[in-house]
Length: 68
Image (tube, rainbow, N blue to C red; front, side, top):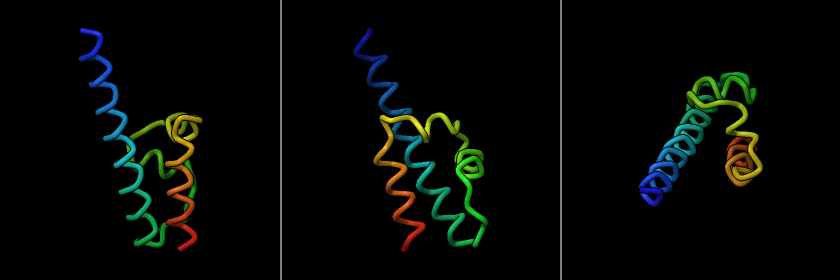
């Protein structure tokens, strides 16, 4: 049972990460003024999820998209 829960949590986290990246791309394409709270709201995740040290790479990916 704990393995199933762990796998479920990993899947949910992957889905949230993908949602953040998709929302960032849409915001950039639409020329929406960027703010982390706006991104979180559009991706339907919490700002805490984006700022979590475990997701430092996700935040860097978003910053790279903004810079490009």
